[in-house]
Length: 276
Image (cartoon, rainbow, N blue to C red; front, side):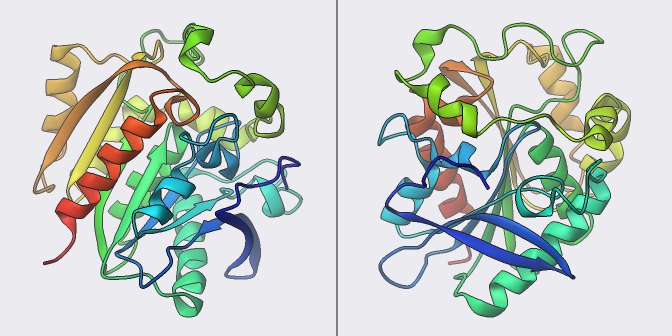
């Protein structure tokens, strides 16, 4: 588990993914939840990515709970409590199934409200898409994805300028981030390179509304007009696809000054997808 303590809103949680332990962070509202956000971090991060401690306005867990949502940020398979059992990690489909099992355990013990939003960053966004395509949950209302396109800027994963200028982040972010970062497991690091090939099939099986956000200073993914038109055209079964650009943000958007604005937009999108 990360050494950095969670925000006052969040607590640590243990989940059972069909016999595999998954860890995470949970923030609950004061009353009945308006819905549940399941947040999946990117490669080389942990669930603490969504509970940035460098500034009070950065944490998705804190904001979501204050606005009436349950927010569950999971250490994906291969991270946190499951790391000793999956030393090389797990591929996208395996992670999707394990996350689904963990959420079933969570839903059996906690109120989830009328709908679920899968919110994923980077490789976590890929897992979220795979989970939706594989029938994640009967109350899945939508997908909110960031730091994930379908065409890399260059062939080498890990293109420059992922963080962007240091001024995009609150003071202390990089010191606090030491406890949030780790080496990505080998299996997912290798599979991420193949995402441009795998994406079309996964996108075509996504049958819920989708929102994709690209940071202004994200140097990993193409997000020019041509690339975005091609990307959105692959979501043939989704009732709605929305693309946004987040100004003054780097790839690690949920840790930066722009986090509050991005998280509010994601929660607004969730509200729009919930049943009346």
